[in-house]
Amino acid sequence: MSESRALTLPAITTDRVVNGSRLRNVAIVIGASLVLALSAQVAVPLPFSPVPMTLQPLALLLIGATLGARRGFAAALLYLFEGLCGAPVFSLGRSGIGMLLGPTAGYLYAFPFCAMIAGYAADRGWTKNVLTTALSMAAALSVNHLFGWAWLSTVMNFGAEKAFLTGVIPFLAGDVIKIAIAATLLPSLQRMVGSRKSL
Image (cartoon, rainbow, N blue to C red; front, side, top):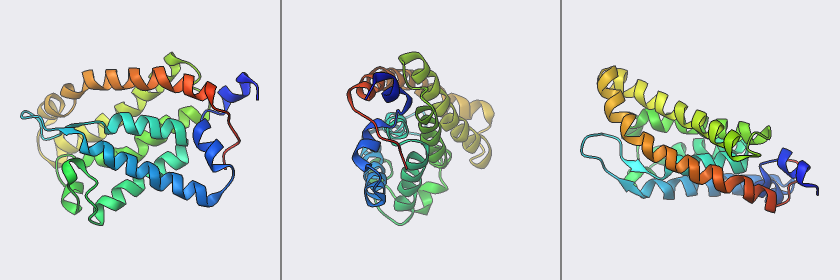
């Protein structure tokens, strides 16, 4: 396969593994939800914020970029369903409806959309170079912060300024690093692995 075609079908790794199989599609989505759950366990509580710092933003970006918009959305949605049903998949092994009503709920609700945006960019070939990859991933994480900030400032009654200072600002530097890691690695991985048309 030519390099140009590989770059226009960027959900490469997943499409090669799935190879048109619905069963493999389901397995990939389940596996991605578990990766997201594992990334939640790498968590650092912050004394000045109700939101811990985790590896989930990086996992979401890579899940979306490698699975594509639909599978990325499905994987993140399944992750939320697993947590709602009592599986200890949320940060620090937590689970249940309380997590979907607490301070971090806005970020959790944003996860499917964050993965979908990263996947949408990949589906359209916008992850063919570092710059466009970084921009699309920054857009995805912006949605994550927007949901989290809105939830903290309104539902949790933090107020707009406090919500921004405790729920957004502390994570921006880490987001830049995560985007840089993902944006640097992803195009190279996509060029190395072949691609087949997704379902």
